[in-house]
Image 1 (tube, helix red, strand yellow):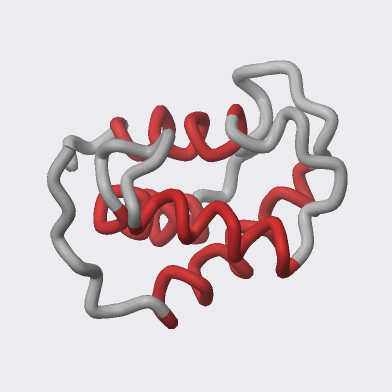
Image 2 (cartoon, helix red, strand yellow; image 1 turned 90 degrees about the horizontal axis):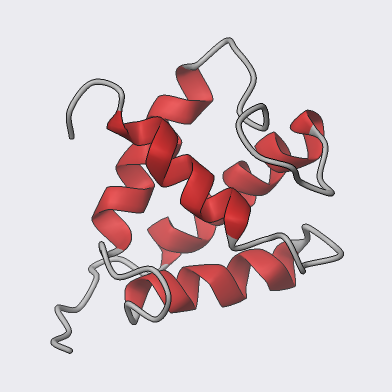
Length: 97
């Protein structure tokens, strides 16, 4: 992934949460399923998992580029849940559209 593309991928995750009220385990599980099955997240789970790794290391804000009902701390906590859910689904099966 090019150096700064991870932020755009993280923004896709954030956008996918606009209508999600609670950033909890259930929401992370649903999103991980959608990523693995390439529903709404067509790049596949590897791209999203790599972006989450980069986001975890990033010291700046992650929620600054689009309006969101979720705060920075809550979104970062959600990324941790999502990373765990994606890891639990390894190895990711290859699907075709």
